[in-house]
Length: 76
Image 1: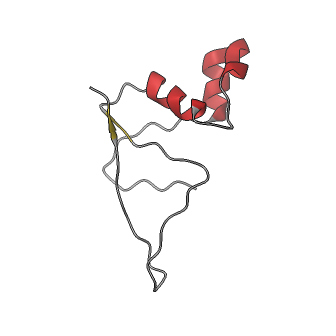
Image 2 (image 1 turned 90 degrees about the vertical axis):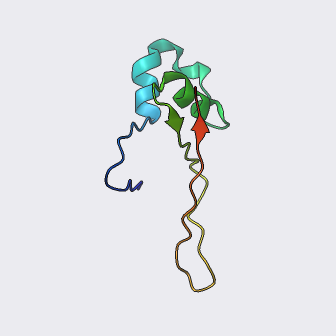
Image 3 (image 1 turned 180 degrees about the vertical axis):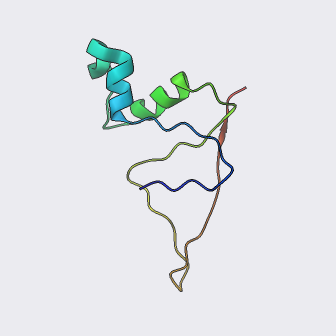
């Protein structure tokens, strides 16, 4: 599950969106590499993009508290 902090306006694209947008050309986007992330870059109209990989987990410090780090791609 993805939790987005209050106050952020966001768009979230998933495999269903790829299928809906590309239709019969869906097979051209691989979900085994970065192609699906690149799809998000192509369709987004936002100035800043925060890509989320499905194989990444929230980092925790030695006492198991979540470590919050933000990174963004700027598309200008």
